[in-house]
Length: 176
Image 1 (cartoon, rainbow, N blue to C red):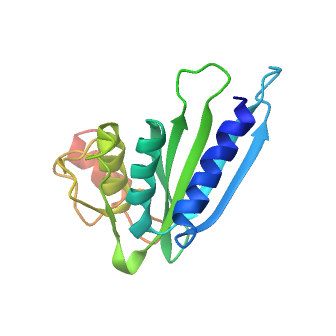
Image 2 (cartoon, rainbow, N blue to C red):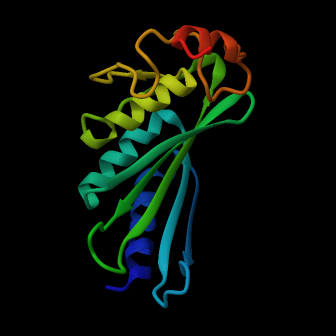
């Protein structure tokens, strides 16, 4: 089975099973750096209500390896993306998979996927603290990067929020 057919088969399976909930799905091939081998990437856009079902399907298809989860403040919403590697460990056969959703700022929540992908815990905690998104059913809500006494209402990667003045932070940390 070639690299191309792996991504095409995966795309077809996703389209057949989730045609009503996937807003967009693209496969593209690229050649990283000077290497001769090509790599495929798949980009999926869906709703937060469908993400967990799609990831469960991926787990049945082939165990996805989570690389990271990231967010971006896009105005009225936070764009949240999971990056997975499918067929991990199979040289020149891996497919990078990005699943994105937009989470409205007036209703900031997503479901945790840690019950199906345990490795997502740290990255979900990061999204929670940096953007203020409620992660429903997350097994550990502690901050990863921010101190335990960091104000709950301040989210460093939100563009619409004001943060504490640097002088206040220096005073608190004794660095004045």
